[in-house]
Length: 122
Image (tube, rainbow, N blue to C red; front, side):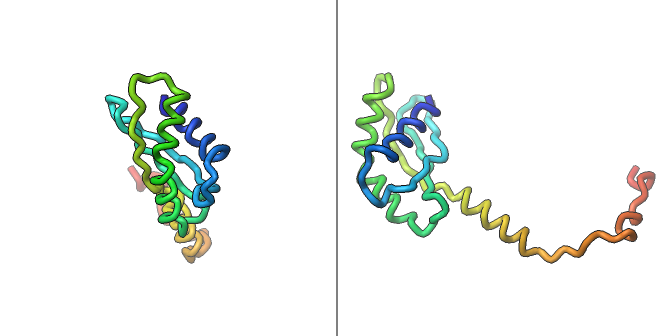
């Protein structure tokens, strides 16, 4: 059901929402509680973390429409309440990559390789 919700919401954002704040928004994850009362929806704006506030405001405004349309497309007794969260994992990954790229690691020398003999590790 999680993948179905993710797909439906992604399609709604792509095809039916006209709010310019919600263009290029990606749903990265959906987590349901055990009773299917709440759906935590994680989103990101494709490489533009500066749009966080406007995206979250747009989603808050569209929440009722999205929940209603979701209810039309899935068969459950009660449609879960949608709670949107900004997914910072992409941003965090990029930051880690930049830090790794900025490291000045000298190339390995022959002396470095000989420093530990295999029998010394036992």
